[in-house]
Length: 88
Image (cartoon, rainbow, N blue to C red; front, side, top):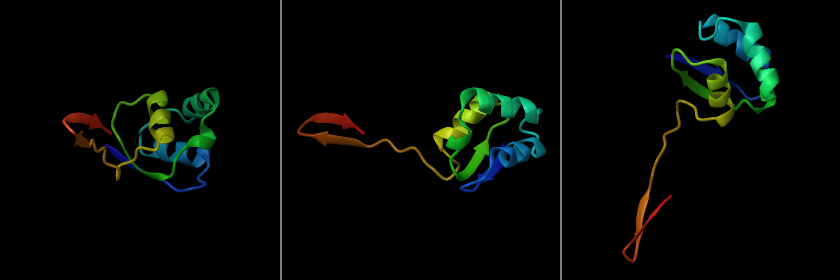
């Protein structure tokens, strides 16, 4: 896994260069093309991401636009209201 830090306001070209330099992607052009085709460049969220090996360009875009980064934890709460279970 690779750690990638995106700061608020980082340009797509900077993020793509970091992904390339860390051997996450093998083509800057293909990643930029994927971002262009999905029109998501302005939607990348700031954060620190733990990127698993073997993700394709579209998986990476989804990760970076969903904003679910390494410091976040998914929590499921089970609350019982008068014998009825609700999930939040």
